Image (cartoon, rainbow, N blue to C red; front, side):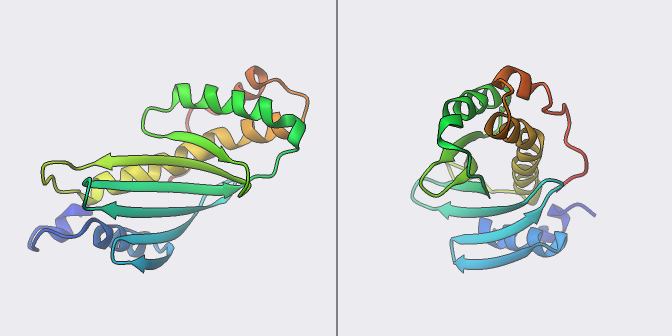
Length: 167
């Protein structure tokens, strides 16, 4: 049974209610921070990713931020930023950024549902899967440019074409 089939006979659901159901379905740890926000921990091959989804009714956007800790040496930041740019050139469904002060690698995406569109469970599940998949794919490259003498070009060669497993 698809995730959406469980919602067929209900009124329109709040996007965060759907996210909560998906988290329960996958047995992920989660905390309903607010009516419009949920935080989860999703385990990947390399890391456990902290994923927060927040619904903004004002601009009808479901925002997702997926983070993991990263504390590269200061002198490696230019290489890390170049690797981020290279990764972002290959990501079509979101983008990486590095929050230096918080020492967090961030993957973020906004799903715009303007005009009263209804968010489906499959869309949200795919959104979360894309975040974990991209993080799993590029994590080794980010580590290599941060902790070795490999260039961003060389490090990106280890970014596997397809992450193993699934979120």
